[in-house]
Image (tube, rainbow, N blue to C red; front, side, top):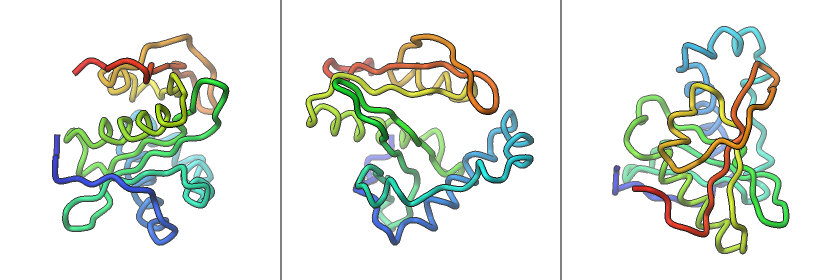
Length: 158
């Protein structure tokens, strides 16, 4: 895990970097590339979550944004993890996990007990390694995925 990373709230000035990471990370997965290229609207990020202060970014000590995560809808006890993207050049360094930890810390501060996500099949292993458990399978716009949950009131596996 890269300890020199900082986690902070995203700012409006970060939007272009987040859009670029979103596209690069989305297209880096060979299993999704063709369907995404055939549906370019799926590769457009909106700045709403930044304005709502629901996006956190991982920033290197040189100021480069390495990845981001956005939380979405909040229910009585859970928050939706809407976005989690790491620049492909920075993957497999613990950045995604640090971003999940930041969303989890915010959920705990809000008194919530879980994070829920609909996981792309290609990200399933990551989410499981981060402590998420599968609830059930769901249909998505481009196929199926696993509806997963992470309890944030107890410590996740290391």
